[in-house]
Image (cartoon, rainbow, N blue to C red; front, side, top):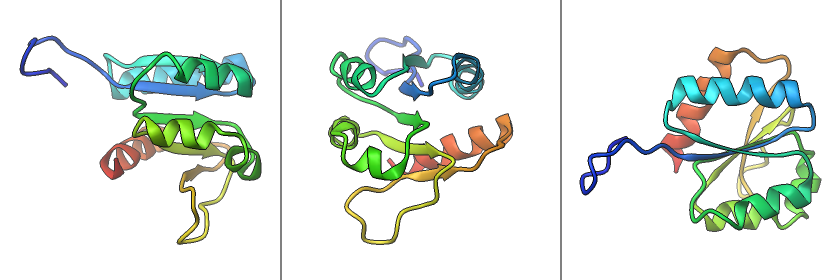
Amino acid sequence: MITAASQTPCGGNYLVFVHDSVVAQDIGQAILVHDPYARILNASTLDDAVAVLSDVPTVTVALMSLAPETFVGSGLADAISMRGGQTVLIDAHQPEPGSLYQWRGLEIPFSDEALRGLLTLSEAAA
């Protein structure tokens, strides 16, 4: 995206909260193919994820390897929502309709193509 005021490309902020650094790197690369100007915010613990989000005003998509019940009770759900972000939980099913918190699930194993398709869907829902 290019902002009208600056004519400078600017990408979204993407939180990647995955415990495995190799998987996190692969996800980051797929995001950069999808959004070449993306800012990847990496976190390996729940506290890191909350701290990283405190430094940004907006989040495009948060991709996390986190159980739904941990996500809902963590405060991270509120931090993402307050920044306008969409959530993707890796290896989790979609929540029930009408649930307080919403996310998209990404089943393991997943391909780069599936991940980029989910990013597109998540951004369109924002």
